[in-house]
Image (cartoon, rainbow, N blue to C red; front, side, top):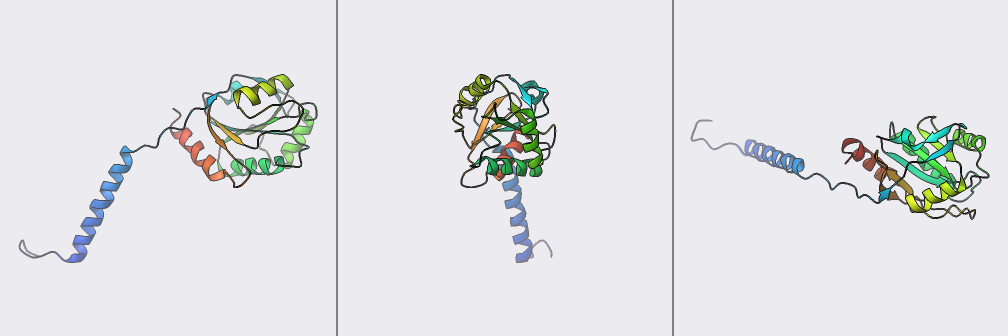
Length: 195
């Protein structure tokens, strides 16, 4: 139409929709989500992997990882926890996973290796650790704040998200619902923005 012609309603609606969309996109750029909280620091540690090789926490530096505490003869929550860890391994490419035992006497490297195979753990991505009971106890109680490794076999069923600097950034319950979507989202956030 000419200069004085009224525009048709479809064109007006389209322009309005484009403006609203553009405003929404601009608003989205400015509002970055709050960084994940920092709950504590995991100190450097040396334990023994399911391969029988020494394992240093330094190999985890620079990438976020998910930890849990289990034992292989557990008939309670551990099979579900390990199944959920296998789901994280499958759905989050490159995610590092670390399962610490609360039964270092029973969970020798060969026992852990057999357990790892049962859950199709990818070597180098999902590590199962055993070692000195006092060190495992200190890590569980003081670093991860998940309870004692004291022979009682009672342990937390929570997963812990640790960033590339060894800082604890999230705790996730595994009892009621699967924490998979939440962990996946937070892992991806830490990959994008490690601060």
